[in-house]
Length: 147
Image (cartoon, rainbow, N blue to C red; front, side):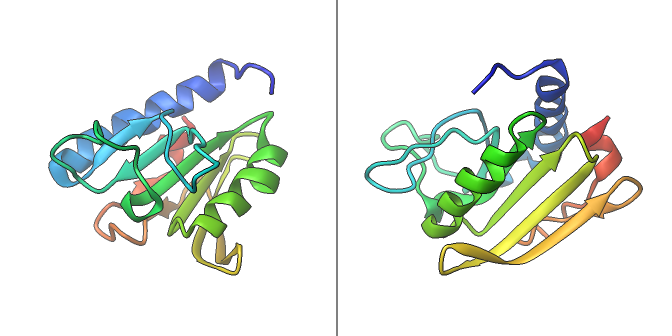
């Protein structure tokens, strides 16, 4: 894959700042770090919101059971994120994945994995808010994510 540009990086930085300020000790924010989906796969999502753990995952990588929410920021990587990473996450049972589509300025909210796919897909656009299923009090403005 080609290197990501400044818009991609800025979006990850915005997500990091937004989530770090809002989550506090309720979750661990992991940016571009590995998670272990199975014995052969350790993808590195752009942002992962993980269940709190005292050791901050020092003794083992997070597993799907540890993940509250994954986010992939897509500019040039949209086909890869949708075609390869999203099915991988669904097969692993990751409960919710957001794809931040920078080109179309929308966040795709994928939830409720079953049989290698997500049963619920919602597109949330500028002017709207998006709320993670596992954290219903955490409403985030799409405009704040897209900049």
